[in-house]
Length: 177
Image 1 (tube, one colour):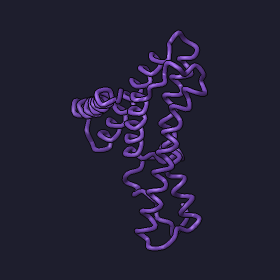
Image 2 (tube, helix red, strand yellow):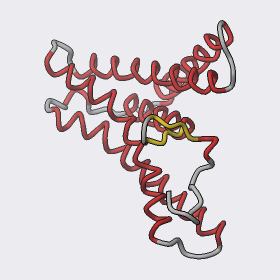
Image 3 (spheres, helix red, strand yellow):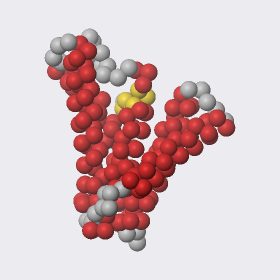
């Protein structure tokens, strides 16, 4: 990190996985958004290529990462009351890169679905269950960092998964058409 450049996110909100800075709040939010998009997308039956299915996964992730970067930059500009320097812009962009990781599990599922008898609907179901598992894992990571162990950690992880199921259920109930 460059001297004199404040991190875009407070260090306490960021985990390190090797050199990668991971923000649990943002990954959780992105996972919920992606799950919602996957549930409401109507064109699954018409998608026959890996590129088409991958685009349905990648597009909302990239769009949301760009929106987060833009809103973070505007917040920093307003907070600092000056335009951002090049190093600050680079930091804002770098802070968004880990959000693209949200697309990896669904893309792996799509790749597996292409070489197995899974149809697009079955692949979608597996992707949603992977999203559920991701929310359980992220909740458990946050709970672990908060000092929860044993049954409390299990309850926290389960609560995160239930929230994911609730979001999926809302999307299904509210789905237009």
